Image 1 (spheres, rainbow, N blue to C red):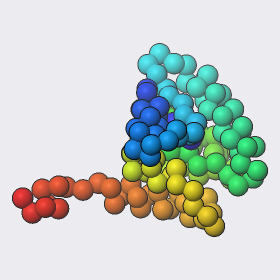
Image 2: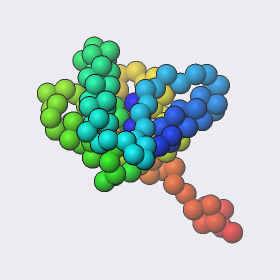
Image 3: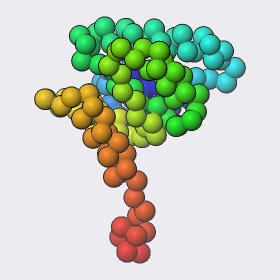
Image 4: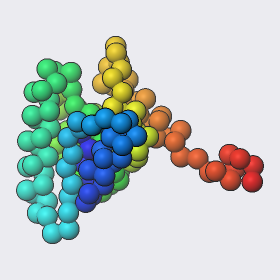
Length: 134
């Protein structure tokens, strides 16, 4: 699932669907200007619990846009409160991370997938001038 400021989460899902040439079924939630943070937190909590139930105990992977931003802070609080549930979160979501997360990876634990996505994020940020020696 993707939790971000504004429409970023739905836009990332839409772009991933365009590139993958099929519909991406990730759940998303955006925090918009004027939203009540307590209501947003409750909405996110309900989504996380539902996604955990749907995972049959495998756990929930959450992607957020900005470490220290309200969506990430809300997720961190919920992760602490629901520490008995298997929940992982990667901040700094970008399109390569979303694309990688949509690939069905057999025999990967939630923790392994989380670390792989962190590495994908790091590897996807490239200075083109240096890359192509311009």
